[in-house]
Structures are given as structure tokens and as C-alpha cells.
Length: 159
Image 1 (cartoon, rainbow, N blue to C red):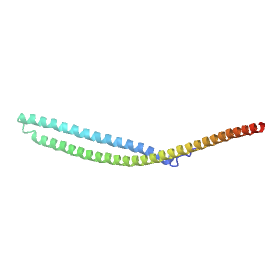
Image 2 (image 1 turned 180 degrees about the vertical axis):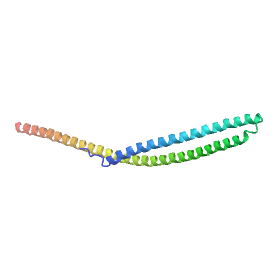
Image 3 (image 1 turned 135 degrees about the horizontal axis):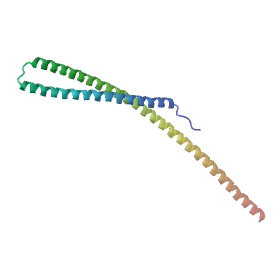
Image 4 (image 1 turned 180 degrees about the horizontal axis):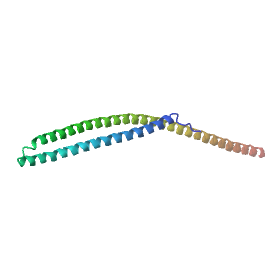
């Protein structure tokens, strides 16, 4: 009768925990990607804004200057906030990744223990099977020997 792995409940819990942490890593990475995409959009918007300002300046309109400065400052503020968000989401992603790696390491250690347990059970089963085989072989040998010796005794008796 095979024994169950004593840490099976812990192993199952660790496996589920790794799956949960993996989802958290994927979510954090997605959040970081969205923040990075926002930065790219803001940089593209800033580029378009610079082109618009260059065109207006080329027309010689000096009245657009105060509005242009205010717009430029607002855009730079949004860009700075976006970069802060990008840094925060990157730190969150790295923290989630580190936590997942720790749980993955724990699961790998439990997997090694599980494999050792299975190997030990297989070894015991093989030893039991070999023992049964040896006993059967011994019985067959003894029975064959008894037949041979009883046959010789009978022949001696007849002679």
C-alpha cells in the first residue's frame, strides 16, 4: 500500500499560490505596459505641439506666446506625472516578480521532496516485488529438488 506524500496539502497550496502570484505579476506587467504606452502617447503629443508652435511662430503671431507657454507647462506636467506613474508601476511589477520567484523557489523545493518520496515508494515496491519473486523462485527450487531426490530414492528402492 503506497503512502501518500506527507506534504501534499502544503505542495498543493504552494502550487496554487504560485499561480496566484503569477497572475499578479502579469497584472503588474500589464499596468506597467499601459503606463509606458501613455508616456509614448504624451511624447508624441508633445512633438505635435512643438510642430504646431513652430507653425504659429512662423506666421509671426506674438499673441499665442502666453497660451503656448501654459500649454507647454501643462503637457510637461502630465509627462512628469506619467513618468512617476511609470516608475511606480515598474517598482510594483518588480516587487510582484520577486514575490513570485520566492514562491516558485519554494514550490521547486517541495517538488524535489515529492519526487524523492515517489522514488522511495518505487524503490520499496521494487524491493517487495523482488522479495516475492525470490520466495516463489525458492519454493519452485525446493519443490523441484524434492521431486528429484524423491525420484532418486524411489529408484534406489527399486534396485
